[in-house]
Picture (cartoon, helix red, strand yellow):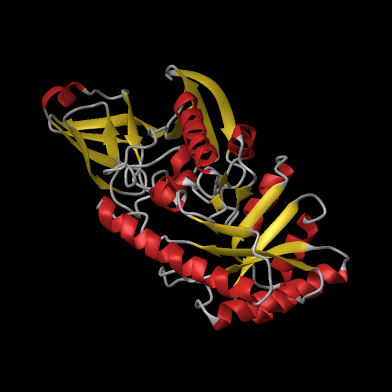
Length: 355
């Protein structure tokens, strides 16, 4: 990897492809479809790898990400998020000419806007109701509100009521397995209760979508859950890897030592402009005795002891970000490697596409 300039995002392609295969094998064994969330990798190249492995489509957080995926050949997209505003809705409906588009909603006014935009140009998009299953972010409250919104969608021209989703995001990072399981099952039972109410009102529910990487093996084993929206599993990151080893760490940031002011301090060229800090300092990989202690815009400061004191100016080291999604958004390309050698350079087409 000597030819790769730094800071740079490095993906071990063999490990990433192994993670893709591992989740797909789980889904196949449990009769649950995989619909990975592309907000992690933001790349049509990796989305196509997931679909080729058996995924039924992908999720995109924003219309901009969906546009990048459709341009890259991905044709089945769920936006598990609210699309609000005339310009965004217009762009969303335009995608329906090129791909199967499904979007989440939790507001009757928004449903009306989606219906007017789609029917006005003779298009149809799928809509799922997002249900609040305990995360207390978006979503209708379970019960009459959810059933009523499903009815509005069903009766709206240009829209196809596909089902429901509920994201148990408040449980995915719970470290204790028993507690995580109990919380995830409670969240999914809330979602399934909403499904029961909708079906009792005479509306079929074809999609019951949920899950994150941290709960895939809980939610994915529950009867009636149709698809999993896991994202981080493809690369993993330092935060997820604390006590969770189902998937292998495939993503690192390559950094260069640019200064050795003292025997116990080294400085790299990788700071906050190339490494997200929302979940803490990165982990230094394969250099025992080296530890990130502080970070600024362009610099990362490490304490070094023992064998790590051998580091010299010009040496390259690998760092594992604590949050992969937000670190990836800072870079324009991946450097894909196999057996330590550069294999390919892959555009991160969805980076910065947050509108």
